[in-house]
Length: 306
Image (cartoon, rainbow, N blue to C red; front, side):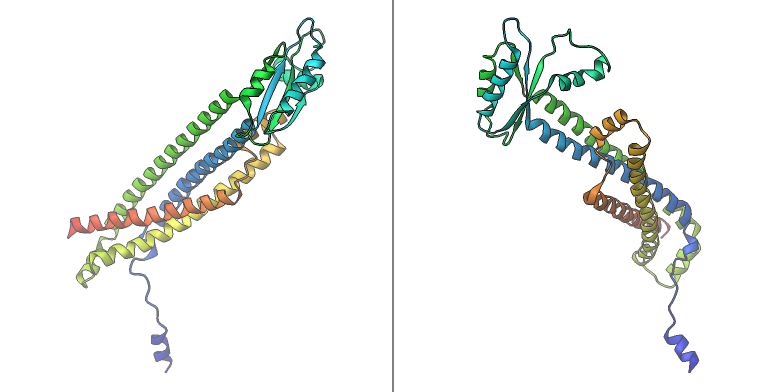
């Protein structure tokens, strides 16, 4: 009776033994490639998110620069510029920067602690738009031109440069990610061929008992799929830890100006839900690439020895 129970609950082991596939080295390689892929994807995503924020902020803000002119009252010109800007449809508010705020803008170039009272520092009026599409920028520009020493800056050139820079970074990141995936596929091809050569006896036995090439390829594909999933998951988790660690290090270790500059380009190094889903997608893509590449390589190898 006990013999019958043992036979009834017997589960056959895998046709391709786990020890027959050099899994540790390949798993480490896939983990490293996945980590690099996820870091590249995360960097591209952060830059793209920051670029969207840059474009939105720049597109909703104009600057009126008013220079001191002999015979003109600077404060009166500032008030006139504010009133003209607020009268334009689509303008949410217009605010003049104080003299202290204007001097603070010059500190990165001139340094702190300087006496700038003898300099004729232009004053700035920040105009925020509630609806950039509805604002009549041409009318505002023509009216501001009537104020002595005043000019309107729409930041359009900066917006184009920022979008171009962000687009270049994104395209470069996609190319790097593509190269990493190609390198991963090539490594899998060599690893699969080496594994097939090592397990030639198993393949011959399977052929002898009537197993088809499709069945044998499926068995090896399942083994490589598990290796790809484990290595990919490890690389993806390492990438998430990397972004968390870098974000904490920037906030705690780096000087404030450097941290602000990196934050300008990459935000707060917070991937968010989209980033986590993207990393999970990269892991699945690499696992699928491992399985498909190994299957194609195995089928070609079997055709060669048939």
